[in-house]
View: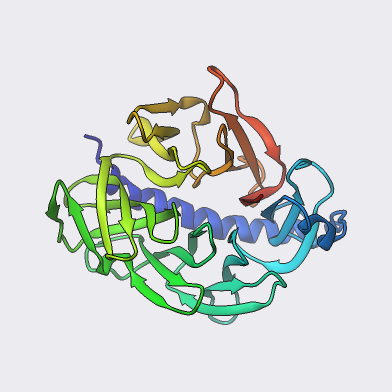
Amino acid sequence: MIAMVAITVVVVLGVGAYVWSAARSHQEATEAAPTVESTDLAGVLDGPHILFRSTLPGAQYGLVAAVPLDDPSGTRAFTDVACDRIYHAGDFTSCLRTVRGIATTFEAVLLDDSWQEVQTWPLPGIPSRTRLSPDGSLVATTAFVTGHSYAQVGFSTETKIHGTDGTDLGSLESWTFVVDGEKFTASDRNFWGVSFVDDDTFYVTAASQSADTTWIATGSVSTRTITALRDGGECPSVSPDRSMVAYKKVQRVEDAQKVWAYAVLDLASSDETLYPVTEGCDDQIEWLDDSTILYGMPRADEPGTTDVWSLDITTPGAEPQLFLEGAWSPSIVR
C-alpha cells in the first residue's frame, strides 16, 4: 500500500506554501487591476445560483460572488464578504477566512441570508474545507494546524462540527473511531473534509500515520461515532440524490510524487470508477447535479488565479470542461 498519509504532510506543506505565495503574488498583480463588471446581487440570489470565491484580477479579488445556475459564464454579482472557502445550505453561508494584521489569524464566520454575521469562532490555521448539512443546521470546518504531538514536521488538520444554533460539538478527534469493528485509539488519528448526508450522518476522511492508511468513513452526530467504510481516498462529497460519493484518490506515484485523480463510488453496488483525466486535482468536489462534478484547479502560470472545471461522469471518455473562470470553492444553491 502506498504511504498515503506520510506523503500528505508534504502535500499540505505545498498547499500552505502555495496559498501564501499566491496571495502575495496576486496582491501585487491586482493592485492596479480594473474592477470586474458586476450585476445586481439581489436579482441573482433570488433564483438558483452558484456562490464562489472570485479569483479574477481586480478590486473584487477574494470576494464571494454569485452567478445564475443556468448561466455560469454570465456577469457575476458580488457581495462585500471576503472568504477563502465558502459553502451555503439552508439559511446560512459558512465562510472560512484569513484575517491579516500584525499577527495573521484565521476564523470561521456563519452568515445569514442578509450576509450578516451570526457566529464567529477562531480556526487554528489556514482554512481548508467547510460544508453545511442540507437543512443548514450543522456546519463543519477543517483547518491546517501545527502542534499535534504526532506531527513531527509540517501540518496536520483539525475538523470541528458546530450547530448553527451555537452548539459546539467539538473536534472529531475526540469522537469514537471504529475500524473493522474495533475502536481505533491511536493518538495520530486525523479527520478532514466532511460532507453531510443529513442532519446526523456525514462522510469524512480519516487517516493515521502509524497505520499508514487513509479511509473514507461515515460519521454520526447523534452517537459521536466515526466508522471506516473503505481504504483510500480523501475529501468525500455525497451526490445530491445520496447514491454516490466522490473523492480524490492517488492514481499512481511518479518520482515519489502522488498523481491524483477523482473517483466516484456507487453506494449500492460498491463499484468505484476512477477518472484519470482530472490529474493534478486537489479539491473537495461539489456536485452540479447527479451526473456532473465540479472542482477547482489553480492556473500553473498565474499564481492566485483558479478556475472551476466540470466533468460529466455518465459519459464514457468525457473530457473536463472549463465551467467557471476565475473562481474557487463553488457552492450550488438550487
